[in-house]
Length: 286
Image (cartoon, rainbow, N blue to C red; front, side):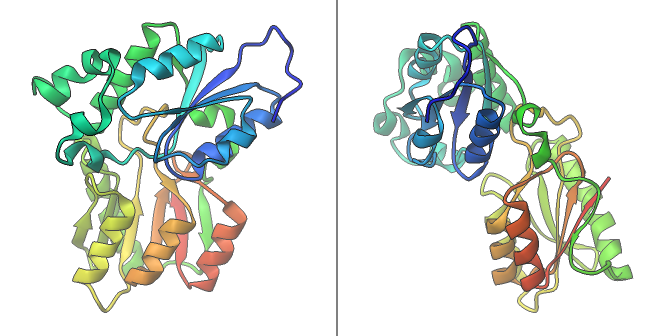
């Protein structure tokens, strides 16, 4: 879809991974009359992005150099990341042979993936990725700079008021989740009666919720999802959507508490309707 952007305006680059978030960001950029050049991570990004963006290319997970060349060819200086990268792929056998990383990828991630001199925490890897683009004059900004309406305001989102026991679980889970976030482990925790059922790590929020359901088959537990204490809003911002509710409903979760102004909510109207239908209480707090 071509925009009516002025010829002199440089496109906004979109590095798109899994989920609906990149679609929401692309749509927001088009509403603001930006041209959008999208580098979509293969086997992650939604093919519908091709229809939304002015320029589009599929990029393999080991093709950082191709992504940089694509953005430079389209005169991109400002870019944003949106969507989840399935980090578990990095631990599959023969990862290097499967994806054949280009030279820029090897140079960027050699200390983390091969030499083992640096850690593989999310902030570390995403920071290295952002720095690699910056060396070629491409600077990343938070996706919420372009779509601030996706951030959740403080207050109830669905369901009735919390019971005293649920309020205690939210407060307890908040402290645990913030501590985990400070260590860059994960952003979500599932609790019941002020006991931790499951914590999120590399597997992601949905798998964490499913594990809590297996460990607490009676259900009724609370999920707390927060931003890291030093959250870099350019990437890895906490995100909830219909998939979160589906996982909670299947596992027996009854309360979802998220951090106001630092959590992205996708498909807001459908989300609220689905939460009410599934009798899940959702609150955004500070």
